[in-house]
Image (cartoon, rainbow, N blue to C red):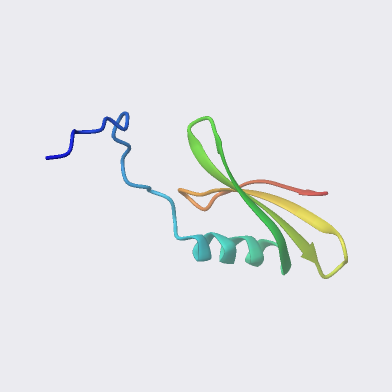
Length: 77
C-alpha cells in the first residue's frame, strides 16, 4: 500500500456559476467581443475580470462575482 500523502486542508467543492453563464451575464451587460478573461481571488471570493471590445470600439472592463453573477465593477479601460 502506498503511503498517504497530506495535500493540506480539504477545500469545499466550487460554488461558482458555470463559466458560460458568467460570460453570458458579461455580454448581456456589454455586448461585444470578449478579448480577455482572468479569474482572481479577492477577499476569499472568485472574481472574473472580463475585457470586452464593445461595438463603440472601447474596451470595457467588468468584474463579476463568480459565485453570484453580480457585476461588481464596470469601467472603460
